[in-house]
Length: 161
Image (tube, rainbow, N blue to C red; front, side, top):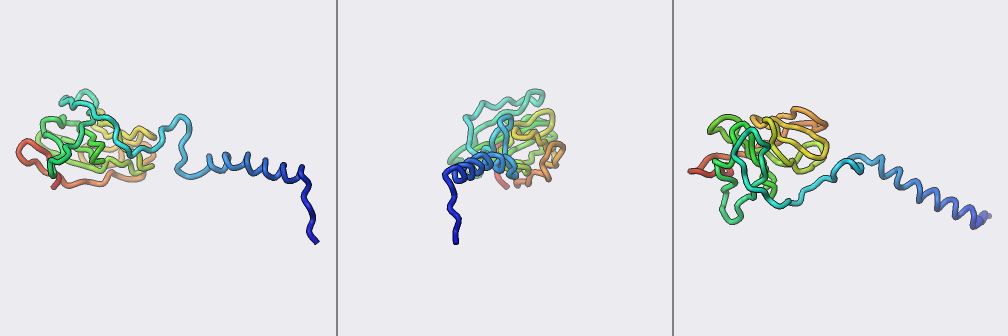
């Protein structure tokens, strides 16, 4: 024999579920709050490069149709770097003439890193930081280093290696 639910009991059950879903959603791993930017993997409009290491590095567009060329070597400041959002790569120059490249996807929450400041690659989502010399994790919640990307200098261009 089955018991019938009253309208009041049904409405109370539906209301409980409707109110409980946002609470469960907020507890989900990898969720963001109103103060945390959502993870981004879409390209933003590029800014012109600034070749000084005292100012934060800027984002420069990857050259479409240029083969393996990533960025002009002169556009990568010594002790800093540039974020190539379209290519999802960060190119750095830790010492004069030494170029390194890393994935621009943060190892914490897969956000796209946004800048290179004071010798560190910075993720805007939760402020994880990584060293320009080797991509090592230097702060924030990221669990590991940024993966290295092989590059070399060909003439005046930094190209994929």
